Image (cartoon, rainbow, N blue to C red; front, side, top):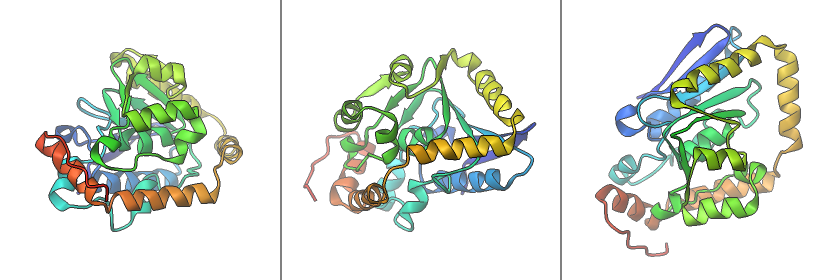
Length: 252
């Protein structure tokens, strides 16, 4: 089941995470929906930019711990499909993220950090709670965009940061009152969509190439993700979170 909507607003595609009862948790249905919408966006000649947003109280509260606790696995059919939910690390068209409320875990590192420009509401909260739940939480986007000590703090301490701190660290481009979030994001996307599509595409590709990480780093990211998501600790961490208790780690 897909939990993601796609619509056109002029030359802008609005891609909406629409699973508000679960705070847009990143489960199989939402991940597949994101991928399908970005494949559609890539092929849609009528739009030149996109805005990615969530409805309800959160942008995306991270992986769906309840789903994992119930099924005992996470994305094992094709982990790469969910590590790169946009379908490609080099999506040619620009994507603006409109972020409000919790932007955690997979919502942060698999969705928000893979967009090109990020605008946050003043109530946005960013964090990586994966280690608390026994999951490998890192990806190459953090090394590309943030200092190593900040990555260590976010990843190892599971620390949350507010919108202002995220702006100071360069995680987001702008912080606005929540009521102004969509207007600000659409204004940015409208500007992007009004430019030469070819010039935008080539410029974006050039920027990505300049900051591209090695194939070895990407391969290690995939391997570590697969190892952690097949571990006993991952299952225990998710069950403990769902049951609101402290996990009993086994180290395997």
